[in-house]
Length: 124
Image (tube, rainbow, N blue to C red; front, top):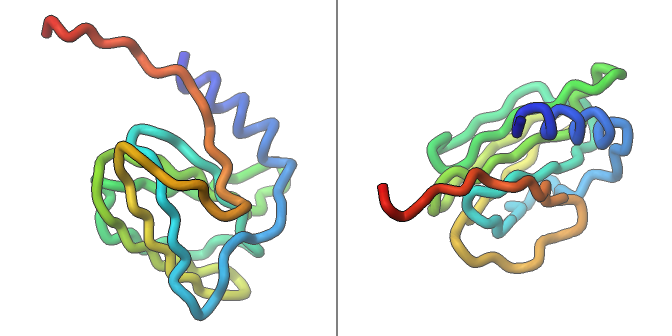
């Protein structure tokens, strides 16, 4: 069920790509909440993603109907700090994700995807 909802969100949001919120020649800092998912717009087609620790943050380029790969799906899996080097057709970006239970408001461009999580009882 979660995958179906995610697929529908991606299909509707993939066409609504915005401006790139990343700054080249600088470390882009994003504070994200653990166990949440986000979308991030980039300026051109993503060529390479180098993630320092995939246990903390997982990043997948999204292919829309236009096959443009100008959006990233970001999943915060665990608490910690993760550095990412993102290479596009036009630029290279350095991004640092700080994932934790509390987070601050982020720059424009990082969109939180609010999906319900599976309820797990404490009696396990």
